Length: 410
Ligand code: ASP
Ligand code: MG
Image (cartoon, rainbow, N blue to C red; front, top):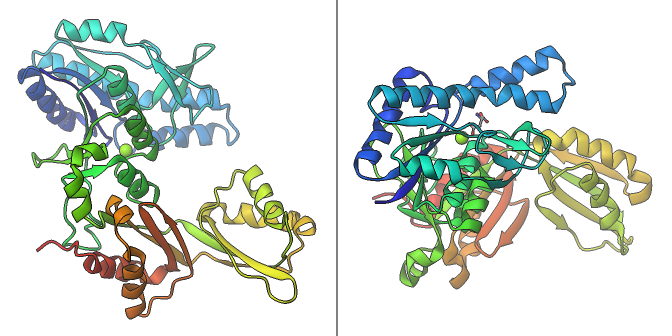
């Protein structure tokens, strides 16, 4: 017998027919002798609808009441799934975030889970009852309902799995696993059998939208074995696990695990920043204060004028705010002008095999160069190389790299 947490996303929960399909899958696991807790999302589109109501009610609304409204989508689906399971003859009950409770910080609309009380659900599961838990919601000190931020039910599921010391956390979604790249761009992309937490984290943060990044961070920290699979077919999914589970030889043979892209960045060049200690600090300090997440940074060598140019990227939606901040800090920084470009894309290759191989970046540069794709900025980590290119080359770059690293399916 295993204890498993099954998580179903919005598309899997959209309508009673689909909830019946979900219930059938839950029943299968129960009948195989497993103890099951289920974490559910709201029906697809429902959270957007509820957010819309809040905006319509008042553009500047109380975030505590926003959470009360948007948490409702998951309340509906958890109750409905319990009803359908019962109708199939399976004992089940819902446990809302405040009933367990799932303790969170009081950062309304982007709260963090602090701890989950599991005594009550453990007892109910031990009696053979399926526990149905709404994702996305929790309870802050002072008895206020909170939500975890969009896409947060993945994180709820991993947190429940960690708290229950579950053997597995199966995340059912509308894709059937993690691919070497976006199959819409490369039809010969392959589904990965396994991927390490670190790789998944890098892939998620650079645009592969299968799991919420925070859920992967939590899984890595708590060593929760996660499986990503589809609720619409029975194909085996992708396991997201610790590197130890791979065995050395697998890691050594596999150079690159995946190629990801992200079109949500914009490039800013600050021209003629004085080349003196503290200048870069005076530039990035105000951006940090304004909560702008700076990603890639390139600083050029000083010209003989004593000035240097600094280029970096920010999330595209933060471009206007960033320019405003930089204009205001112009006196302190002392630059001559700003150049912006939101016609860029970041392409990343990710793989733990990179640690023990030389020449990974070179393969990337050569492959892109041979197709006339110019590289505007580069960043690397131990297991990732990212380059910034003109947006119109996104698909071409992904295809070329997928082939260059031998990832195309036979
Ligand atoms: N329903 C929430 C959202 O749409 C949480 C989730 O589905 O993960 O963001
Ligand atoms: Mg999701």
